Image 1 (cartoon, rainbow, N blue to C red):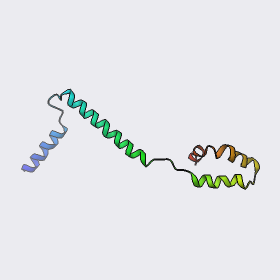
Image 2: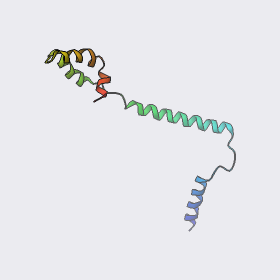
Image 3: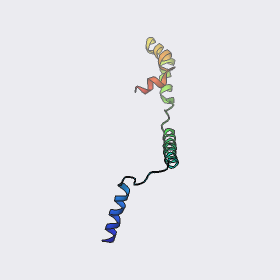
Length: 92
């Protein structure tokens, strides 16, 4: 029974509104630490989201230029697709 009361008191304490004012310096420090933590988490997550190099796609698209089957298609690949491979590969 005592453990159940202790658990209820802990839950009440966690979800109760603040009973006293927090000094402005403490609140500012808490905000700064929260922003710093979120910024570090963002930097950590940005690392694995780097865009791919599209080297395989560039290699196979260059075959359309080096071994042309249809000259207009070869021109489009050479002058529009290969220089902007990041844009055109993102549509796939």
